Image (cartoon, rainbow, N blue to C red):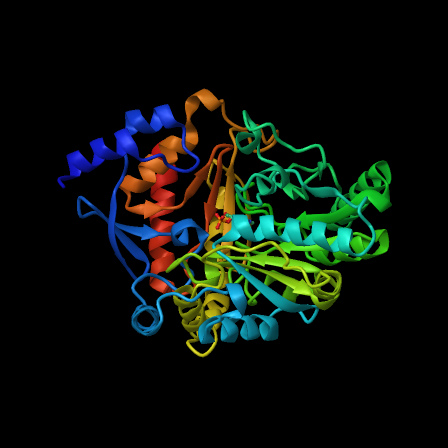
Length: 447
Ligand code: PLP
């Protein structure tokens, strides 16, 4: 098909995730054709530096031959194996064992899903089952953070606290509640300690309001991604974990973005020695080479469910749970992170990323720079003192994304004038220089 026929067919038939449908029809699709290393090429042959790892997932870069080989070998050997009826496959079992070995010690059991949304959905189902099975059926209320993103499933999009995911979808559900996000740049708190204390008291107050006996769990991202890369102060995650323990509610960490080296260590939990009751992962698990996610859970939750099943099947499963090709990819991606040196490369280059973002603080448009590891953001303001944003009618994020594209750079321009960055862990020092040179040029152009 020619490019123009593809654009036309897309307009007529393909519904895209999280776009305005009418705006998309008017604009048309940008077709991506191929990719290698840190660059993607569009159908017109433009080569673009990807500073967002696809959708915060291609952590190992594009075209990694060993990953392609692992997938090809697994497809030839056993392209599909169900996990139903007590069947299983070698790569899925090995990957589960590795995840348990490399994740916080509290997590002992792995349930594979197809991505992050169904990992969150599965976590909610497991928690519900656990409390029903262990004689606490009234524990049904869930708390998450404002600006949080926990996927697009019918339940998870209610834990997500972004207006576009609720509007016209009858969300949040009556058992879904939010507390304020630890958003340092826009908080009144005097310092980090005060911000942490404010989050802890907000959680305590919400649990008191709902009644501790009614609250099942608190869900959070260690760094809120889609909500605008909100980086909480060091110590925040640990304080929230301890608060959940004191309050008698489960602590669920959603590491779909922050996992697999994105913030430095394999999991963000590691940096603060946090041991969640459940953890959801996806994206970097297979680095986007095939869909896969997982829920990791503590032995206590697993036993609560297992011991109460009374011989009946636990009715939760997908045809593609623990897909052997995705698992084989996951195993090779894990090897690249560790033996392949990509975690170390990401950690070594994180200061360069931080310096590049911080240097843009003197740009007239940039009010805030925040980052951890290779996850970062710039927040643009019209006035640095008042931190005032821009009139939505100016469509600044759209203009920035278009200018960046002309400068052969891809990142995420969020609706509220936040620019998100998540370069691959395989970036070179030269690619960071290229990223910041193109980014500065882009900001100058829209000034
Ligand atoms: N949780 C978090 C923190 C995410 O960032 C995302 C996706 O961006 C999800 C869940 C949903 O994952 P998926 O898009 O793979 O369904």
